[in-house]
Image (cartoon, rainbow, N blue to C red):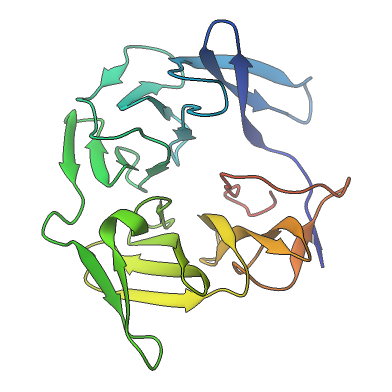
Length: 242
C-alpha cells in the first residue's frame, strides 16, 4: 500500500463565480521560504460554473501554460508576455496534454504548435484504431480515443481510457497511430497519466471509492492522509513523489 506526500509544484484553480472567470495559479512550496502563489493566466468561462470549466496544463519544462476558453486554446509563458491564440476548434476543449517538445499541445484531437501558431489534425487519415492483444481484435474510434489521451514522457506514445461495453479500456498508441495495445480494466476508470517509470496510472473505482491506481486499474490504490476520494485530471511530478 502506498502513501503519497505532497510537495513540489501544484497547479491550483481559483473560480470567481460571479465574474465567470477562472484564474490559474502556480503554488510553490520551497523548503526555506513560506508558500507562494503566483497568478499566471485568466480564462473567461462560458456557461455555468462546473459545467464547462476551462482546461489547463503546464508544459514539461514548467515554462508555458496552455488553457482553454470554450473552443479556443491559449498559450502563454509562465513568466508573462503575449498570449498565443489559435483558430477555434470544432467543439469545446475539455482536455489538454503537452508533448515532450514543450511546443506541441494535444487538444480535442488536434495538435497545436505554439511556435508556428498552427493547428493540425492528429492522424488525419485514420478514423479507427485496431489492437490485437486478445483473442478478438479491439477497435476504437479516433474521437473516443483522443477524448482523454495523454502524451508519454518521451512523446513517443499516447495513453487513453475508453468506455467499453464490458468496462473501461486502457489504450496505448504509438505517436504515429500505427501501433496500438488495449487492456481491459476491472473497474470504471478515468484520468490516465504517465508516471516517470513509464507506467500509466489513473483514477479507478475501488470498493466504491475513487482511488489513484498504479498501474491503472490495479487492486492496490494509493492512499492519502486524510483518506479522500480522488478526482481528475491527474499528473505526477518528475521524481514520482507526488
